[in-house]
Length: 107
Figure 1: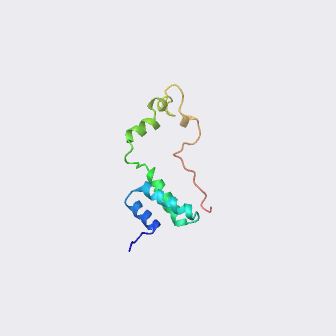
Figure 2 (figure 1 turned 180 degrees about the vertical axis):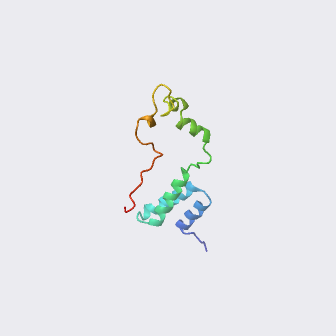
Figure 3 (figure 1 turned 45 degrees about the horizontal axis):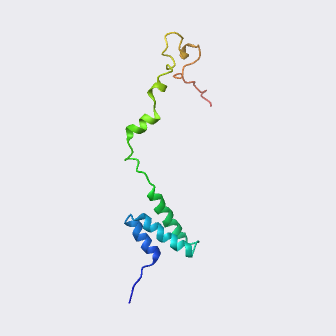
C-alpha cells in the first residue's frame, strides 16, 4: 500500500523548508490542472516573492548613503541667513518663524 501526499501539502512543506523553487514547480503543476485554485496561487506567489526577497540588513549601509547623498551637491548652496554678503531672510521686516500669532480669546 503506497501513501502519497497531497501536492499542495507537499508544496507547503517545501516552502517551510525554504525549497522555494520546488514549491513553485509543484504549485505550477497544480495550477495547470485547476487554474482557479486560490491556495496554490497564494503559495506560489509567496514562494516567488521569497525567492527575490532582499534583506535590507545585508545591504551595505555606507554604499546606499554614498549613492543617495552626494556631498558636493549638498554644499553648493549656502544656507539661508548664513551669507555675509546678503542680508538674511529673517531681516526682511516680516515676522520670523519663531513668532506665533495669538488668537482672540473668544475664538
